[in-house]
Image 1: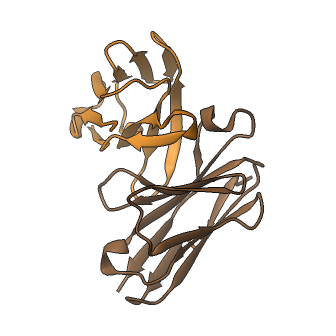
Image 2: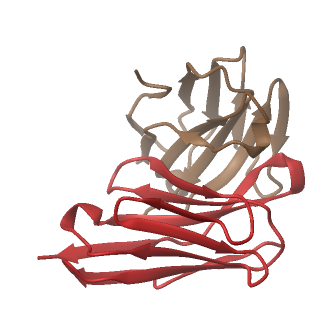
Image 3: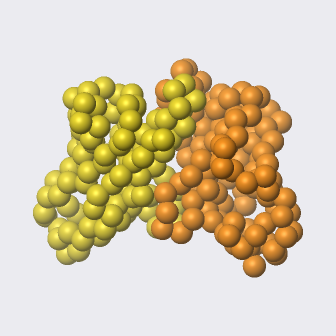
Length: 112
Length: 115
């Protein structure tokens, strides 16, 4: 059974600081996604990582994937308040069925 | 402009009273998914359709059913809602290229409260 673990689950940051969210998964998968969710809202796709060593960046967020270590990171650079949200990583499970197994999410709060 | 639409956005129902949630998409995607997300938890897949083929997750309660009358629409029926079914229900789609490899796009969700 595929397990996806994120840490930390809660993160309080000051504006301007850097931090990294980690996502570990237990079995081989060829795709990993990062989603953002604002309170009471749906999930917004941020990144899809398809291969070992993949790195994607959008604004202050950068995601990377190490398939050998079964680890993905989401790095936040110079955090701003607008980044406050819950971030989920999700890993494809079940071969071609495309079922996503989500981590528990990291609730990020960026304070002035 | 909306690509995955869910109705209603908020639904309150009585314990045991059947409820139907609706999802429609303008993306012409092959695959449509239903997830349940309880408060402060990760989304959990209930089932999905690949075209007309229905795929149920092993631990999805029998109380939850789904219908997909055409490519654009998919419904979630909860036959006898219990208090534990209070949650956000998210519809997602993927495809049409290599449907299972494409990113899943989520609708805004329906927040269901069972009283």
